[in-house]
Length: 185
Image (cartoon, rainbow, N blue to C red; front, side):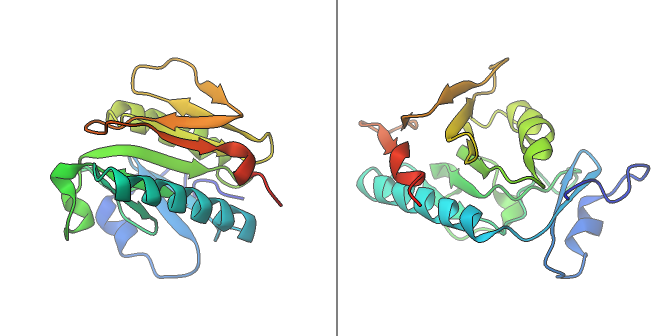
């Protein structure tokens, strides 16, 4: 189960980036170490389906670049944070070949819930993404077949179980993703 490896210790970004490749995903939010195991196949299928839908949309409306983790997203060298959202869309100022540390403009972060990451995704990382003003954060809940939509100013999520509609800055038409297609077996 994903839980902080040492709750009484403050970790730095540099320490986490030096951890060995051992199959776990290490993330850091304000010095708190978040550890989760490799994702399951269902999780990866959802990541792939959503990535594909967003990529097709961005090919028609090139207002950003979609990527998947592993990635080490931080907001500066001195930041005590490094996260790996399942899917993220980089905004135009940061599109192109850059180091992870150079990215700071995003349109969207997406996390697919799993038993080992639900608490982190819903609380720890959600608060961080709101604090960092990520314009849209989707939490995909496969078990309940719905998506929680968060914005920086939201105090509660908007729930969507039929379709996701997303209009990033600069686009003239919204990205619409029918959720029935995600829940297919």
